[in-house]
Length: 366
Ligand code: MG
Image: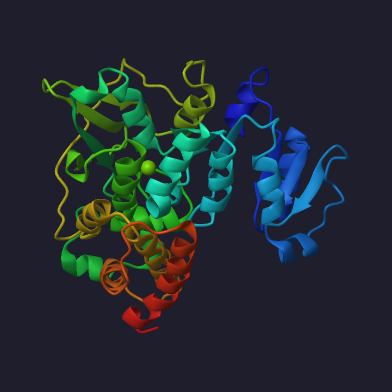
């Protein structure tokens, strides 16, 4: 919203969507006066007070409203920023109608990377990453030819527990896990950042988005979250994208690409001294990374299963039902017990998504 506010000549909000947060949707609609407001959760929409919705804004309810709007000919860019597998439906319709998809929802590619990328190619859709690491890779890739790329290095803050021992990790509380050192985010992604499952999902996202061999993707720990990722070319030259941790920059870049314009994001003060650290991750303490590489290699149904299992496991952790260190082993157990299909349909992925959420209770004893 701040990015749109700073570029009024250039960006016009045609539609806003929410699931249950109807009051926030009304507040945002009052500010941006879109043609459509979409509330995807019918029962929340029924209970909500829409009296303050601007006259020119038409209210649409349910997933059908979402489909209508993201495929509308007047829409150029769809920003998919819903957390979790719920983001796939809107993103899929946007891709099918050949839109530019500004993608913050990594689950779209984690769940259905090969299907989404193939459909984008078939329908002439462009997918531009908003996830900060992938935006960095996308920007850095422009420094060289694609065939000269050796590898991509994704940076990870390491989360609040990067120095914790295995014993300390066992004792992690919900409050501790929700307290991220550099990024202020929703609870799901904050826990994912603490387990490093977020980075695992980003390995899978990068694999499909950039068409990489999983072995070309490496992770380094960089606690300051300033170097957003790096690409290494054949000759050993490494190109990185840096900026103070502020999502407004990757969001704006996806909205103005290939142009760069003034951005309301934080800037470096080069009269100050900086120290930035980079170190390899410890996959013994953070086994999610190993799992991420395995799933990136397997493809097929494994991404959808890992993602759903993790969503359910994080929910169970937040509800106090399982320990922090149970999350990743539970995901692995569910993954290893699913019927793997190397080239599933979207329908099959949705069925497995539901299956994995149920199955997680077997492996966590809840
Ligand atoms: Mg990210």
